[in-house]
Image (cartoon, rainbow, N blue to C red; front, side, top):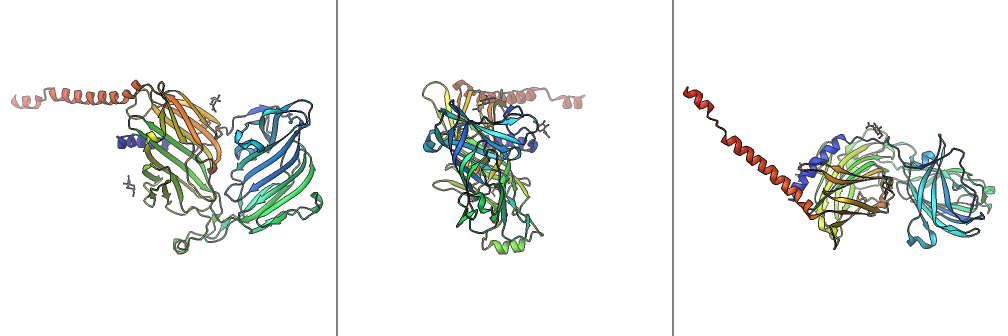
Amino acid sequence: MRSFTLFTSAIAAFAGFACADLNLSEPLQSKQVLPSTFTPPQVFKNAHLVRTTNLDKAYPRETVNILIENIDSKPQSQYYVPFDTTLLARVGGFEVRDKKNAAAGTFKVEVVGLEQDSTTEFYLIHLPEPLAPGAQQTISISYSILSALKPVPSELAQTAKQYLQYTFSAYTPSAYPTEKQRTKVKFPNADVTDYTTLPAELNDEQKADPQKQGSTFTYGLYTNVPAGAQQPVSVRYEFTKPIVQSTLLERDIEVSHWGGNLATEERYWLINEGAGLKNHFSRVEWQKQNYMNPPTFALKGLNLPLAVGAVDPYFTDDIGNVSTSRFRPGKKENLLELKPRYPIFGNWKYSFRVGWNAELSSYLRKLAKGDTYVLKVPFLEGPRAVEGISYGRVSLRVVLPEGATNVNFQTSVPIIANSTSLHKTFMDTVGRTTLTLTALNLVDEFRDRDLVVTYDYPWTAGYRKPITISLGAFAVFAFVWAVGSIDTSIGSKKKAV
Ligand SMILES: *[C@@H]1O[C@H](CO)[C@@H](O)[C@H](O)[C@H]1NC(C)=O
Ligand SMILES: *[C@@H]1O[C@H](CO)[C@@H](O)[C@H](O)[C@H]1NC(C)=O
Ligand SMILES: *[C@@H]1O[C@H](CO)[C@@H](O)[C@H](O)[C@H]1NC(C)=O
């Protein structure tokens, strides 16, 4: 039964792969649009702000802790965070919490754009409780930025070290005046070859700016920075690892009640945004060097930690079955080690598909009353790497059985679009109920965030497929019988004439 499920899903998947060209021209973000004259009402000030820029991964991660104060005469709950439009399109996983009560969950946020071709857009944060006049609250904003690190130089010899440049504003961009602020930049190591030095007069302590402490540099303290002020700086540091982005990930999760199976298939379109290869690729040199396993800016392999219970894995790329992959079942996880056919240097692309099966009972349970089922799966499984991996667009499809209705979902991953449709595959009558979710600019830190889907599935719907197949088999049988009973003796009659 399992192999049958695999067979049908493989057919469906191949049909999808052939026509799934990369189309990123769809609007990237649903947003509220305000007149171009809009400026955020000046009802807050930032009493104190500390930003931490973490550069230990292949994408910068920003954490901004701000003590905000309501300077208006009425309670306020709308706090704006400005971004350049081109930057906002690359910001992912923007989340805001109460610094003193992080367990209470994330605040509601939305994107606000301006009419015409404005260069500024905002994240609008809705405080769960309006802040009273004169009151203060510490909020913690975190996000990642995709495609923000530039290899300098942009081309390297096969065995060279890679250096990345990151450009940002030493003043944290804000829609409000900031009384005191600092930016801490955390590098992956102390090999920081270049960095902007700002005049000592700019900072309040009249000290060398930035202050260095091991692999952490601190810009500031700056006092009374006006709203909207920027102070561009850039840093360059060693990072000899690939900068892997999956421009698109299509992830299909197919529930088969009948087969008791959960089939997962993922299709990746990867690019290494690191340095390109200066000269021709030398496989001899590569193999000689590879023996010692030195750091490299090429992508050599990917490790997908699958849940215990994952079986029948496959890995194919544009050419076909890739035999250089390994599957290592373990106690805590089943590790799928993928090795592309060649190392992927900067600007090179690689697309492939992986899939596996699992027992449905580990992911699905039926509520005691009624016909409601609850499915709990990771939103993202994807490769695990020290340097991390980012996802430009994730399209997740959950294919439920035929006849499933009343589909609802819940996830803490920021979703930009959701829809429920019917998806017809082999031997389906009405088509399977399919939930499609789209997320933008995710990073691997969102691995293992759950997606919970509930749906109703009456037990009679479960007989739809066996009945279809029986009817199909019966039709074939009837046809064979009908053909068999036709008088085929025409030829012999002719002979007899
Ligand atoms: C890409 O998507 C846009 C918006 O949905 C659509 O108008 C356009 O035709 C698509 N392009 C291709 C090549 O499919
Ligand atoms: C793909 O490779 C695996 C492992 O080498 C093998 O077991 C499987 O039969 C291959 N499948 C095809 C379709 O060639
Ligand atoms: C799903 O999409 C609809 C609009 O198509 C929207 O109103 C709804 O809030 C979305 N649900 C979630 C949980 O994002």
